[in-house]
Length: 62
Image (tube, rainbow, N blue to C red; front, side, top):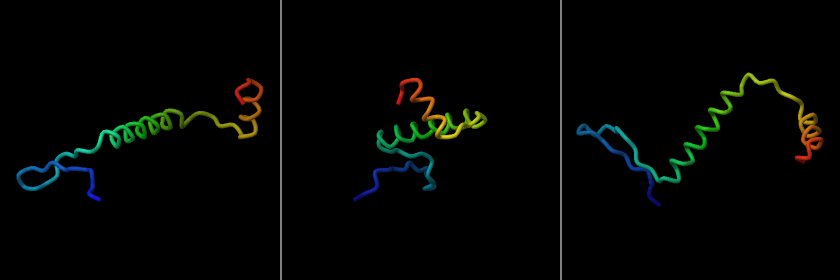
C-alpha cells in the first residue's frame, strides 16, 4: 500500500509542503484543538475521581 502523503519539493528537491488526505488533516486539527484545551486548563484545580462521580450523580448527569 502506498503512502497517501505527498510532498511538494523545490527545484533542489527539498520538501517545502505536504499534501495529505482531508481526513488526516481533520484529525490533526482535532488533536490540535484538544491540546489547546489542555493547555488552557492546565492551572485549574483538580478533584478526586470519587468526588467527580459523586457530583455528576448529584446533578443527575450520571
